[in-house]
Figure 1 (cartoon, one colour):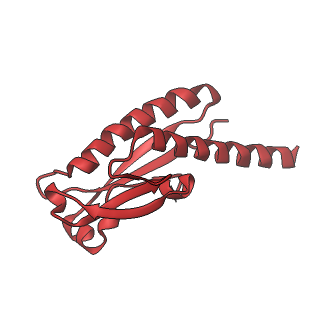
Figure 2 (spheres, rainbow, N blue to C red; figure 1 turned 30 degrees about the vertical axis):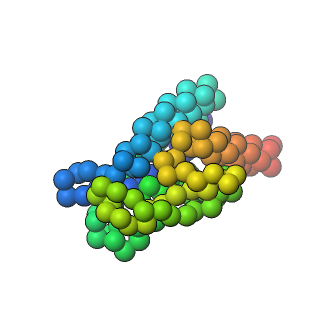
Length: 141
């Protein structure tokens, strides 16, 4: 029986012209790389990953700028999987000079989320999924 895919949700500001900032644009490229890696790595064991992109309107962004460039994996924030801190720094482009989301891990601040961090969190999510499935199957047997 195939497992439900691990869902990666990525939220970012998209303005009326369909543009986002450089930070989110670069994170999108990193997400694509990470998704390719995770998909290839877990295909043999029947675990797949899906990416859902959620566009935040300028009004939604204005209410809560830290929702932009947010990544959720299996319902938990990337920062939770990695034990990272969410921070903020001034942005550019469609974001204006709003304080946009950053991630701090091991004293390093990331404005663009690199594929390596997304892959680490994806591996932890896959492990959590496997141990849940394995534990449930073992309990029945």
